[in-house]
Image 1 (cartoon, rainbow, N blue to C red):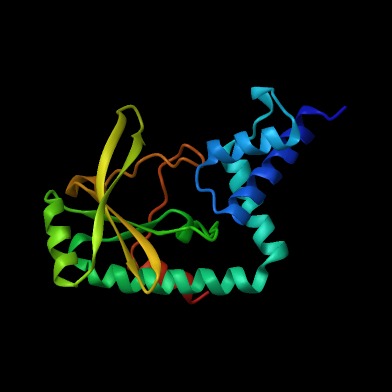
Image 2 (image 1 turned 90 degrees about the vertical axis):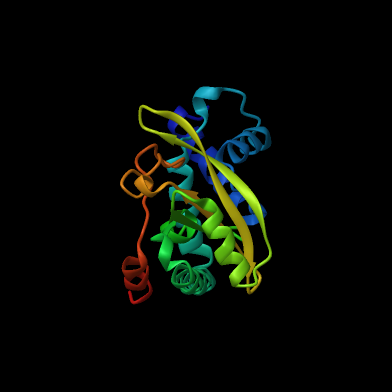
Length: 197
């Protein structure tokens, strides 16, 4: 009989594989599919998001070291270009492209800061970009959940999700869905430094 620790590890590995191979972005969905595939019904056995994220990174380092590294560099370079185009909004890179735990469907996630989201829409219009509205729910420590507006568009075939936080949002990052701590965000200089490593 498998121990609870080995069962959690197997579920984390399977959830990571599903996220990578099928482009699943939702940790809960990946956990449920992994549990079904392995015939596990016990909720206590489900791994945490951070455990799955660690397995995603391990998988990529083991099975895709060259292609993963090249793809990550391309996404980060493209993120810099988009950050430059939206420099008026103090852009920050967040999500999988920052952490490195990308899959085939990972968008470039940018956090922009303005009290007038319509200014971002006007910038997209000026750039000639076709976009659509998108929203994302973010949890804040002690303040519940906030619905953040945003814009989804493509640049050279890559999806970009530009989420628009109020100006004061620059000082307080929402909680990460991976580990429940403040979400890591990187300014242009930090993204450039990651590319130079």
